[in-house]
Structures are given as structure tokens and as C-alpha cells.
Length: 479
Image (tube, rainbow, N blue to C red; front, side, top):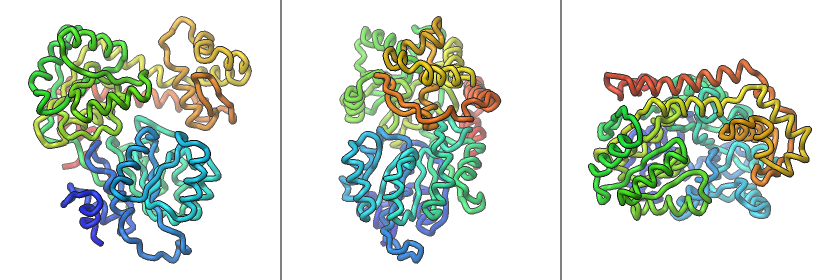
């Protein structure tokens, strides 16, 4: 069976988008690939099609059933992705912390017994001996590393467990590997290949940029909420709701709420999406937007993962995003149907100060990590009784909005120093503070890199030439 037959049989498409077929043929030929493609560009087909191709017997498999293993950090999307595959008659499943212990054990057994062609897990799943044992019963022919920028400390969403992939690939018999991401600078691209333990000469990079002529990039310098509101309304009126949808991104929930009230006063229908909403509320709002029932959403960056909607006519950033990569990924949600779409960044210099503060919060120094760890070790009774608020009071009493504590707890969790929940506070300390989190020189270098990413976006804003050309240079896209 040819890839195009698999495409039409299972996915109902008659032809591939370039360069999907070239990527697929490389992978089924047993060769590695690094794929950089905008969100919604069809990255997932590049490993799903090979997973469904007939496998030739392999002497090294020792009779084990072939499996395509998909590593992704996005637990919230796994169920949707697997449900969509199962709806198409494809044998796929996921295993993550959202399942009950009984269900996880059932799926471990099914994997070991040869069920499923595709399995979605997070890299953290390899910490579980039961999973490693079940996986050892399978022949992992293809390893797909989604959101591959997470493997690199130079990336914008580094996850420590991704750095174990070199050893994990070796344990799996060094399967053919495809790494996929929407955003990766040249430094990150090289680091992805290095961290996977691959020879650079054995990896072909497929780089599909954001250079889509239908996306009209604009930067408007504004002063105050009134000018921002006028520009939002102007862009929305340009695109009728019947023609498609729009997203307005905000950095701060309080700013989003302020504009929600102003748009309500103007009787502009919309929904709001942010991380403080209950999960069911978020899903309901996302469904309203995807179905077209409400074509305008005001959102924080929490909105967007899994949004594959063709007719998004405009994406407005009401506040400057935190990096070139974040902006690049978010505007990539516009105009996937090829029709004209506006990407408008409303730049107010005061918003830059907010992002600079965010960078400080997301990059605590070594002393702050040590102070948090000390509270968890030596003040467990108070931590368990009074939770985050008590810890904040001890750490930064005069800075109630400081988010460094949340950052530190998140990193301690990623480095497997702690496990459990924060609210309510039910944490278990598993081990010593990771050395990476006490190396002040390393932490300072990461802060500088993050500041450089924000500076690059500011330079784009002030760039007087072709902004598409500037983006290409930043992401290392060659013509």
C-alpha cells in the first residue's frame, strides 16, 4: 500500500501538502527527519501515515509487534488526538496521569500484548517501571517527538525529561526518529539533533516557514486602551462573522477582563478563555469557537493548543507576547484556508515592562530555588496546613503578584524533585534539589537568552523593511 492510499483510506484526502509526502517517504525508508512546520500545517500526518503502513519483518524485532511511539508534553490534547484517530478506525491510545490507576494498568497490558499501532505518552511516563516493562514487549519502529523544541534549553518551553531521549532511544533499539515543532531557531534545531543522539548528517531538516502570502502582518503603535479598542473593532469589522473567526490575545487576565467589559458595552459578541477557568468551561468555550457559534474569542496564550480551524480571519495581540517564538506560533493559527487574514500586533511600550517582569518571574535565581526547597523540607507542617499563600508570604511578602513560586514548583516537578498537587497542597519531596537549579551561572544565562527572544520581537516591531524576511532570518529559513 502506498502512502497516498493510506491518506485517502483513513483520512479522506486525495493528496498531500508539500512536503508531507517527502517526509513520509524518508521516514518509512528508515531515515531520520526534523520537521519545522507551522501549527496546523499537517505535522501529525508525517508520523501517523508511516504508523499505518505495512511493516516488513525485521530480524531485530524478535517477533514483537511494531509500534509507533509519540512523545508529547500536551496531556490536554492527547485524548482529542486519539479520539480522532479511533473515529477513523485507527488503533491508537494514550497513557497519562489523567487515567485511573486501573485504566493505566489495563492499557499497559494491552500494549504489552501487541494492541495499538500508535501510543501517545509524555516523556515523564518513562519514570514508571510498569510502562518501561510493557514497552519492552514491543518493537518501537518509529519514535515521533512532538513539540521537539522542549528538548532544548535554548527552546521556549524546556522540559528536562526530554533530555533523557538519547538514552531512551538506545533502550528502544534506536528506532527511526522524527522530531516535530512549529518553532525552532537554528540553535534549537542543532540542539534537538544533538540531544536525540543523532548524527547531524543522518537527519534531514524540512523547514516550512510562516511565509504565507495571505497573512498580512501589521504592527500598530498605540497609546492607551481607547486606541487599542478602536483598532480591535476596526479589524473585526473588516471581517464579517460569516467569513470566519478571530482571536484577540492578552498577556494578563485582568487586561482581558477590562476589554471584555468594554466590548460588552459596544454589544460585540465574544467569549473569553483563560487558565483560571474550570476545565469544563474552557472546553465549552473552545467548542463554541470551533463550531462558529461565537466567532470572536478573547484569550490568554492558554488558548490555541489544538485549535485547528481553517477560517480564522484575524489574530490580534493586544499586548506584546513574550518572545518571537510565541508570536510566530500564535499568528500561525490565522488563514489556514489560504484566504486573506490579518495578524495585528498592538504595541504599547508600557506592555513591554509587563513582559520583562514575566521574564524575571519565570527565571528565579538559585537562592530562590533553595529557599523554596528549604520550606518544603523543614516546614512541612506549615506548608501542608496553609499552602501556597503561606509560602508566598514567607518568600515575597510585599509582592503579592510575584509568580516565582509557581515557576519553582513547576520546575521541581519537571525535574522529579517533587510530586503531587499544589492546590490543595499535597506534595511529596522525592529527592535532592537538582544541580541544574542551583547553578546560578546557568540560570543567569537562561534569563539572558529569554531576554534576547523578547528583544528580537521588539526589533521586529521597529523593523522598517520586509517583516517576512526578518522572520526568515531569525528562524534560519533559507530561500
